[in-house]
Amino acid sequence: MIHIIDDEEALRDSLGWLLRSRDLPSRAFASAEAFLAHARSPLAAPDSPGVILLDVRMDGMSGTELFEKLAAEGLCPAWPVLFLTGHGDVPMAVETLKQGAYDFVEKPFNDNSLVDRLMEALAESKRRLAAREESGSREARLASLTDRERDVLALVIEGHYNKVIADRLGIAMRTVEVYRARIFEKMGVKSAVELAALLGSRRGE
Amino acid sequence: MIHIIDDEEALRDSLGWLLRSRDLPSRAFASAEAFLAHARSPLAAPDSPGVILLDVRMDGMSGTELFEKLAAEGLCPAWPVLFLTGHGDVPMAVETLKQGAYDFVEKPFNDNSLVDRLMEALAESKRRLAAREESGSREARLASLTDRERDVLALVIEGHYNKVIADRLGIAMRTVEVYRARIFEKMGVKSAVELAALLGSRRGE
DNA sequence: AACCGGCATGTGGAAAACCACAATGGCGGC
DNA sequence: GCCGCCATTGTGGTTTTCCACATGCCGGTT
Image 1 (tube, each protein chain N blue to C red):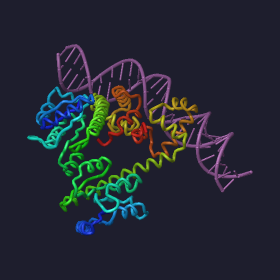
Image 2 (cartoon, each protein chain N blue to C red; image 1 turned 30 degrees about the vertical axis):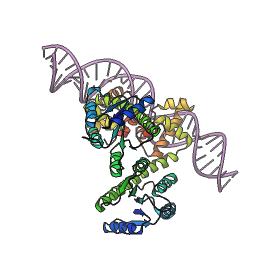
Image 3 (tube, rainbow over the protein chains, first blue to last red; image 1 turned 120 degrees about the vertical axis):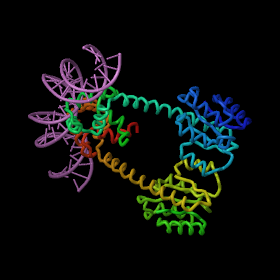
Image 4 (cartoon, rainbow over the protein chains, first blue to last red; image 1 turned 90 degrees about the vertical axis):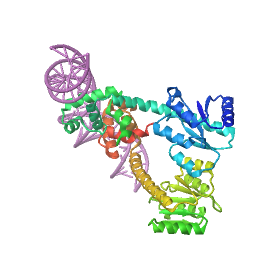
């Protein structure tokens, strides 16, 4: 779903028309405030693929202010944000790109080019949702571990023998064996190697 | 080393003066072609921290053309590229940022702000060099393995028992044991878990 | 008081990994 | 012809991991 945010009715209408003609579902908002309220509501469906296409300059809250609020509140993180701008403001474009904006489109724009970028942004949204799904599942499993299991896990993925882990934690090696088995079961793996591959990139966190 | 590339002598001089006043070593080039020749030469020292500060519009080869050539030829990848631009060209700024340019600075610029950005870019260069060092060492170790050792390694980091690896490769389990030990020694690790953490992010490559 | 979950420890035994040492054949380079 | 390396296999033995089952203490909850 392409979310169009622009205070100019004519532009909203023409964009809506263009997207309908390409079978891209869209919804228009006349102001940043209106979209922000929608994003905060349970009806926003942030777990579905989406894209935010928003004008930079609008009456009331600007596009960049909205972008900052969405980021600060963690709203709709899987939806790439594309800015529409008629005013060639390079520092602002550079700054918001660095802060995570997905693209900048200058007005007037070429219809086909815009649609291409929106479709690529939708694909990116799907990728983000898939990555979050996987990460979330892993996070949920980690959250299911008890404190002691986490202590043991941290040492297991460093590659230590159970005997060493026992010494470090001041418990029996047999205890470590039991924890190890429970960790494997809860994390859905069959070996410490799988654990390390799954969590190895989290080292230092 | 800050590499200044601009066809305007006055700007090269003033930038050089500014950087000298802040104890930042710099070298100026009057054209993109001149810098490209330097970058291609053995005197470029791409393994030292550096930054490329270059104007967008120059006689002859433009800044963006130079940027593309550096990327295409893999020259000085550890040196972040900052563009100087007087002409607010948003599409070009967006496009080159997406292609890896580090920053865009609009003229006229604030001296302190520019210096801050250059120092941050130098820090980024150091981070890139450190990361490459580590990655390169790992690559070198991987390159030292024989073909058969690599076959075994791939299965070890998937978490398989030696017995399973032996069956898959059609060799004796004892043979796998010997290879395993050699792999650990060559890769500088003590266990399969360490290997998985080191190489786990390479899966799918 | 009873129950539950977390944390801890233990027995028994099999399977797997690790370490050291030794050996063979093929192949390519000198 | 000799040498070094790769690939492969083996013996012997110890250590570690895995699996199953059993038990107790403590604190919190019902």
